[in-house]
Each structure stands twice: as structure tokens, then as C-alpha cells.
Length: 76
Image 1 (cartoon, rainbow, N blue to C red):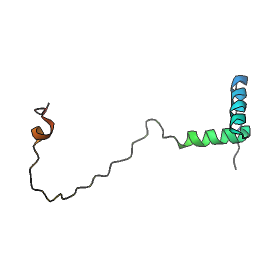
Image 2: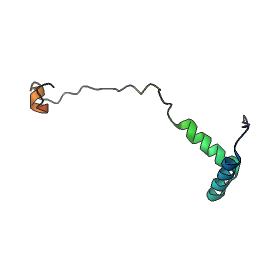
Image 3: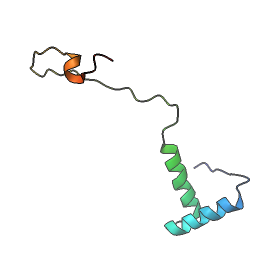
Image 4: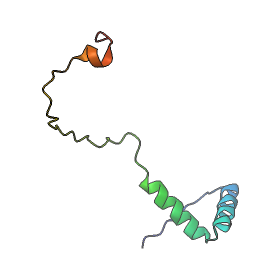
């Protein structure tokens, strides 16, 4: 499994991670692995959204669609 080495982490950050790991009852390594997994699972900003899949269904009705009936906005 690959390893990561992160330099120049502020002392306050390391201390906070140690406190967090202790609160969760895990090692610092496990706490960081969990945090990295969660971060990696988040969607990227600016990523293309999933395409919608639209399905047409037959409702059995034969009424025509009239926008003003549904929205009452005179197409504004």
C-alpha cells in the first residue's frame, strides 16, 4: 500500500489530530486514513454533474398541455 509523507504540518494541527484520534479511540494513522477516505469520496467542485435520465410514460390521458393552466404566469 502506498504511503504519504506530509512536511511542514503546524504543531497545532498535529495536536488537534492527536486529540481527535484519542476522542475516536483510534491511532493518529487511522484517524488520518479515515479523513483522507472521506475527503477522496467527496465530489470535485466543477465536476460535470450526472446526466439526468428522463423517461416518458403514457398516463392514458389525452389532454393537451396548457402552460397557463399549470403556472398562471402568462409565460413570464
